[in-house]
Length: 393
Image 1 (cartoon, rainbow, N blue to C red):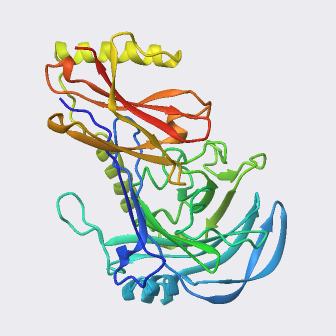
Image 2 (image 1 turned 60 degrees about the horizontal axis):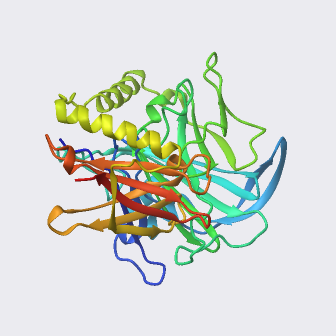
């Protein structure tokens, strides 16, 4: 039996050179669904320059503000995606150009488009089948004070991350957001503005229910950012939230809704969530669970279990990549190697220096002695100390 935390963080964007393919112009985040996190992330994007009048919403006040942004079609063109460029320029595209300003950031929903085979770069499922029925939405984010957003080559890039996601009226936003629905995104910075393109399965089939695009502070969905009315199904901003929590109703034609396909989408989500086969546990598994339980109990008190040995060669200081994560890796020679990602908000919700958390573990069938436990400790300066622990032999 093996349980291991091994999400992959790919960085494939070069601001210094002209890329020659979509993936060379994007930052692609993928965090596979893990037992430890139950989280998913992907990514993608577009860009272009247009002088447009955007509606600026500040609290309850509405004003008109001129802004220069790349259009969704230009964004796709930058990525050499001719099909998506044409789709965003076609009659089925929904161009919004609505701006909302909160917590010192100006967020603009540029537009969205849905359809079959409207991109040069379509993903495949785990069986090699092309997923050609897609939904794309483009968003621009900039600082309200005019200071340019950090370029991806700068250390400050990603220090203030944003979670951009569609939401569906009538469905709990904490259960149905980008990462839960297997969506992805890409982003880049141009002219001091950060552009992000969402890419996921076609959710236009929920148009008769109502769809939103939300942009909130953080790496994952923040339950404090929005309010969900269980009676009406409406999703609304939490006016008391002191960070970014823009929310845009997506003006789709309700006639494009397809209840049957929408239901199929929800069923596929349920099937995927429940697709893991139950694992039979033997005595060794139960022994591992008992040891881990005791280990975590001690850890919660700021102590290390007496019979736990720290593997000194794995100790390392990990810095945040600016997106709320920190990478680690280790090499144990003949015993193998490993790597992973520490999700800081998940591991240290209280952000208390000195806090320790188990972020993953692995072991071989029938061998408690083979157990390796990934442990992260939050430091005063915001870095994280990683170390592997195992039962003393």
